[in-house]
Amino acid sequence: MGISQTKTERDGKLDALKTATNEWFIKEQERLDNETKFLKAVQLGRGTSGQATKNFEVMSLKLIDEIDAFLLLG
Image (cartoon, rainbow, N blue to C red):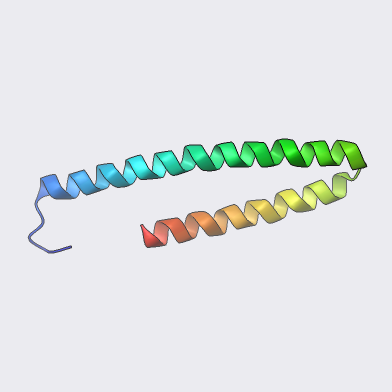
């Protein structure tokens, strides 16, 4: 990126980043929904709500780390 970047170029890159972020979010939300369904099925099958809660907490922290890494690299 150079200082001589025009407003149009900058806006285009910001729009591309917004589009990429939205696409990533939709895919990640779908993945997390599937993971939630799976964990609920495991919870019901085993009767281990404590493990499901722990798994949810671990996945939540992992998601936060992934979002931080995405934003830092973006």
